[in-house]
Image: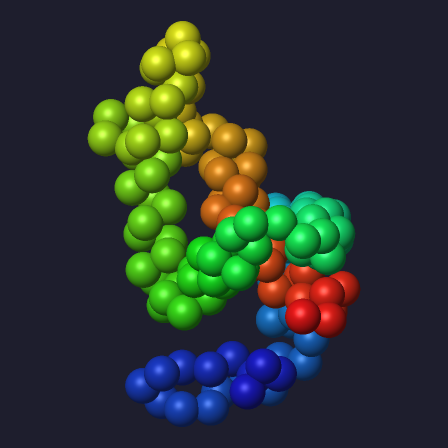
Length: 143
């Protein structure tokens, strides 16, 4: 199908070879999306690894509340991804979100998490990191 000009109503069309691939690989929007995807993967994976390793080191120590903390950190894995995304969106909301409320209390004003592509990128990395970093620490910890 990718080597033909496909029409939904007519079915398979004429053979076009690599024309569709050349068209996609020279499209600026596709290349930008590919760049963002690669940067997100590298950034999120590196941060998850580092935070997971740190958490594994912390959990090898004995301290009061260790088991409760493990359960609390594991909890986001039990919630559907859409629900987690909605919760994080509400947490970062400009007027209603607790994170922006904390910023206002600390004197940081006029900062929007979604007003630029770079801010939105790091907001998504933070949400992904908070949802997934615990699973990264599991291979490092026996118990």
